[in-house]
Image 1 (tube, rainbow, N blue to C red):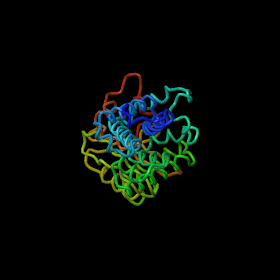
Image 2: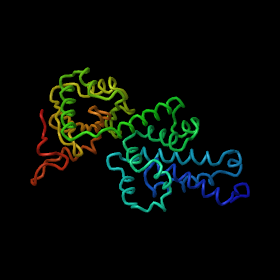
Image 3: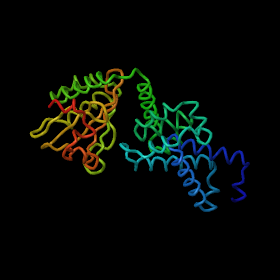
Image 4: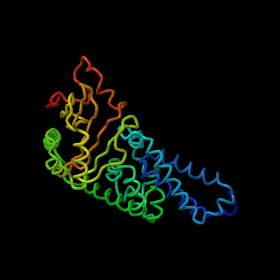
Length: 308
């Protein structure tokens, strides 16, 4: 370590703990957080001496670097079977060893789990702004959006987290609402569909880079209704049915008897809060395999084979 980098051990450890906290809350995995922080310090020492001397706030630079690494890793991860969820569950109750133990006591495991349902940018903006209190310009630099855009992202995240804490929906209520959504889509009733959505509903379209789909999430009940009706516009040889998706009633769109899209719904307070549209052919491969002799596929419930 250069003489210019010399710091009291307490400050060194506090800086590393802070970076680990940031990475942990963005990725949800202690192992991943360690890896991110190691990479961030590696980039710091990869700079020339002259370049490091130009950085007046090393801790801020490291936080921006760690945040950028986290976003890159999240962008590469598969939301459907994100390995960080498995890693987090495998960590066990060793709170004393976790870099984010103090934060866990403050905001709780429920919040960390709820963060998984946010979009990349929303999660980053909320964590950096609300959990760590970083300045708006720092958050904007990490997320790659303008300060007003980051403020909007954080507000949407706060709203969704409040929705998550609201009264849960029973399976029967979820099923009834999903079937109502299907009926609105089939009859192309925009007003009915919008009324079934939360005012701040969000729709995500996952094409996996293999189908030309919307890249950015769609926000707002009217906008989400319009995007769904456009996407599910009735055409010859297309059908839309309700089926079990991830254990709850969702929608399945078919073209020529091939599953073209699987739609899952997150519901709160008797309205659809988030819509997840999977179009990635790789993720739909199991849906298009012939059923096994032992019974229906694991993602389908025998009592919900469709109401086409």
